[in-house]
Image (cartoon, rainbow, N blue to C red):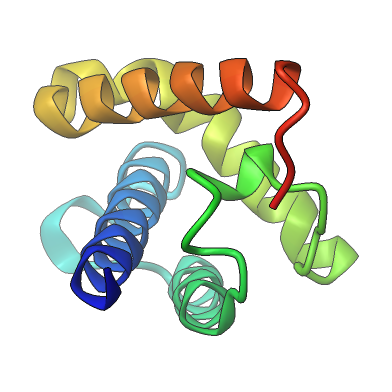
Length: 117
């Protein structure tokens, strides 16, 4: 089970990093030069939060979690990134996006049935 949690954590970190990179490239025009300082800080913060998440075993993504561990400023930044990058991920990372959609739908059904962390 420990291996699955670590795999899940790494997938989540990879997904959020890809979404931030797409956002930065399109919104801050960084191209292939990497991330701007603001997006780099957000990416590092998101990875750190995933590393420390005590609910990784039972949740899919942060958006489905009842506990919001991001600082308000960072939460707003990641929300902007998700709103922008989410619909565009299918064109840039289609396999990861499809996995994300499937896992999110499964999680929402689980939550609706009343299962908790």
